[in-house]
Image 1 (cartoon, one colour):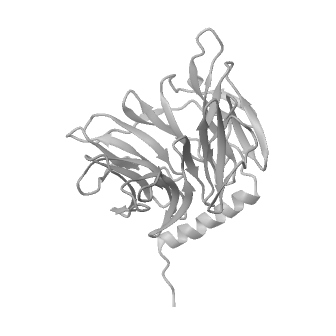
Image 2 (tube, helix red, strand yellow; image 1 turned 60 degrees about the horizontal axis):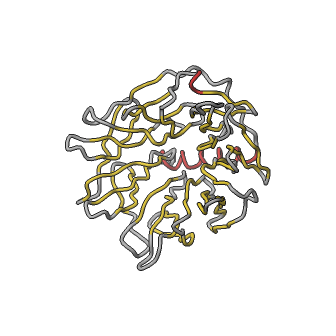
Image 3 (cartoon, helix red, strand yellow; image 1 turned 45 degrees about the vertical axis):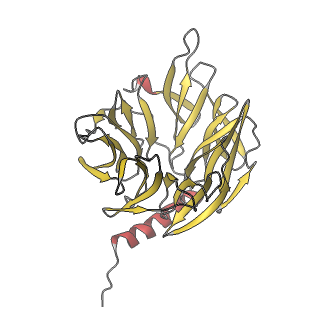
Length: 326
């Protein structure tokens, strides 16, 4: 008798195999960054929008204005734009991340300034609730269905959390000078402590927040891939952290740079200043020790580049329009 297996089960098995293999086997890097072709993804009403994240299957999420002027979370898939909506009674929403199953992490905003972390799955919005207070906010989602976010318990400051299948894992207090940035498929969470004049990175491994995993003072962790490679900014320069080693990614000639995302091939996305006199900021890709100025590859100086997938495609925005760079 032939047994039927759901597509989600098959994808779970495939994803598990990929994650296991990426942890053990180096993935070949892409060829030299191409000259990108820019695609305007379109919006719901012809107004403004932005793309904020993309998965390796090509799903893109972000937000778009609707006819009323409100912002709604959206998904672009195979040229089709889908309004993911808002929670009942809320006015606005924005999608912040999407996993390989197409599950989308969203924050929904009410007119009373109350925010809720939301999971969009199979056409349905799921209010994740809170840790006891009024508000929650989504930050990311991984292929295990864990939603990363923040929420305050009743009467307390916000805590970091991981949510999965209706269960919250409280990762501890997030002080007003801290931020949480990204999560990978192993549940590792990265972020930092904004304590002027120095920032301190932190990471959460195995569901337990551990400060001081990075020893470099004056740094922030902004992205992590499924191989455990972490990127961010350390003492003014973009860095990649791997197995206890911090690599300075350099700059495009100026004094400052920072890395914002890394794909599972180890290709890093970031921003760097140019040399004096104007120190203009340009987006870059870093691969195998080489920085490539993306303005030499079809990206404009003022484009906002938010994410990179394993094919090296980029998403972001330009003058209020959501863009795919492929």
